[in-house]
Amino acid sequence: MASEKRIRVRFAPSPTGQLHVGNARTALFNWLFARQRGGVNVLRIEDTDVERSETRYETQLLEDLKWLGLDWDEGPDVGGPYAPYRQSDRMQIYHATADRLVSEQKAYYCFCTPEELERDRELALKEGRQPVYSGKCRGLSPAEVQTRRAGGEPAAIRLRIPEHPIRFHDMVRGDVEFASESVSDPIIMRSNGMPVYNYVVVIDDAEMKITHVIRGDDHLSNTPKQVALYEALGLPAPEFAHLSTILGPDRERLSKRHGATSIANFRDMGVLPEALMNYLALLGWAPTGGTRETFTPKELVKEFSLKRVTPSPAIFDMEKLYWLNRHYLKQSPPERTFKLALPFFQRAGFIPENPSHEISRWFYGVLALLAPYVDKLEQLPEKASILFQHSATAAIAAPDNAEALGGATTSTVIQAFADRISNDGAFSPEHFKTIMNEVKEATGAKGKDLFHPVRIMLIGSHSGPEFDKLLPLLELGSTLPLPVHVKSVRERVAEFTAHWGR
RNA sequence: GUCCCCGUCGUCUAGCCCGGCCUAGGACAUCGCCCUUUCACGGCGGUAACACGGGUUCAAAUCCCGUCGGGGACGCCA
Image (cartoon, rainbow, N blue to C red; front, side):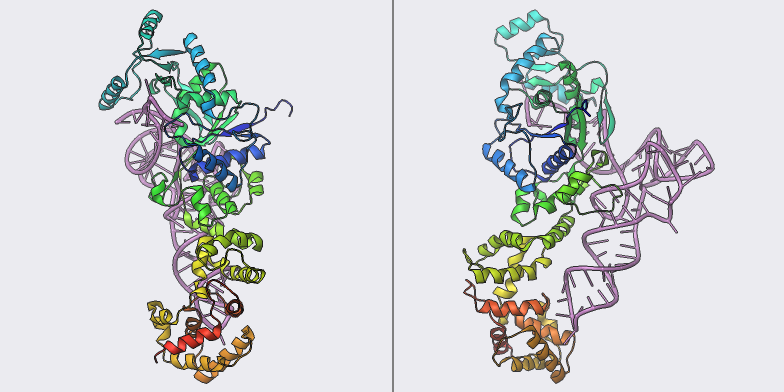
């Protein structure tokens, strides 16, 4: 135990856009692995692409990760023993190391121009060869390099890929091998002096003592280059774990055109973080036995295993995410649901900015009634339109209601119900039951014929939540100073009969 | 094109490493039934898969080879 090296993993996004589900899943797997094994989780910002990197994205990145429920032990915001954690702040290291590699002949200056390289590339493609670097500048004499550089000719620095095949172990795919000829001598320093991604990751991972590199499998083909770099540096390569790609329903790599794919999107539509985390964990990983689906973050930390991660790509299934979200929505304490749902109702203009105690209490009831019926919080105001937006004319005109309102007994049911409701006094569920039985007796209508017209009269639709909970909310709501008046049962019935032409 | 990775129900997957316990398990979706004096919620059931072809073996979803299909990488992007 004492000799066991402490596990160190990192999540290294570039701040060039919103945090995507693919990256979020990578971040999650790193986090789970670190937390389970008592390791260190490092957050590092890869901003060597100055053109596309923006600080606002970095800020949002951290927010999104925190919202999901992840945290890190070292990073740009919290610091740590291997600071700085932003690549743009680490240029010295990259330059110094590159110079060292050149002086050790493990890397060399390359004077080839981009145009030249492009020509070579096209030629190789046309001849059906792997488009790798020709090696033109590999054997340049030190003297020639010296004079050309002195003459101001721009030069990039390339790493020399060794002659032997490059192998590495991947925790999800096993042993992988690349033939030396199939990998180019990669540029590690651009001719403008800026280091290249494939180079900086390795330097940083090595400097930061990263033991396990868990990342998307789009990096799998880059790995031989990186392994070669470790070799050149005289350092052992870390363990790798390449996670499969997340695809859209069309089996293409998931992207914005598939709809909501950023973490912020899901948060904004009212998906609970624990639901998203649970779903993401299930994309590519399954517990022993493979029969359990719901896991709290704690349980995930306990059960997770990199060895049980599947190598095959997975299609993102919104329906299953929604199922999990419904599951967690039902488990969510009322206070939390209240806090999360309130903004949606305020935006819809249904609940005031600073709801009174009475209104809040009533709103709790509304949420208890409607929350079991939605996939995401965002759908709540629309579901609540049965309380806030009753319209007799719309209900009568709705094509969906035509069949239910077209029955032989419809009019007599409506009339009988209306007759019995006109008296005053509180309108309770018990009262409602009594009336319904009387209406049944009087009209001979039962089942659908009985309930559908009444339901349409009260909420404008033949389907909706149970009356026992709905009715008291209607009654109480009608007495509250809401921005949008909630009509009482009597108001609804009166309005409906006034417009009912038959 | 070349290289690498991947291929079990429509979808996520268990099983594959260490062949027999697999008449292939679970979940989402879908369908049906029950509950509800109606609908939804909920409960219970059903349909549905080892990509294909060759081996190896007494025995293959599991091992080997090939084919096909999908994805990724081939950049002075990350």
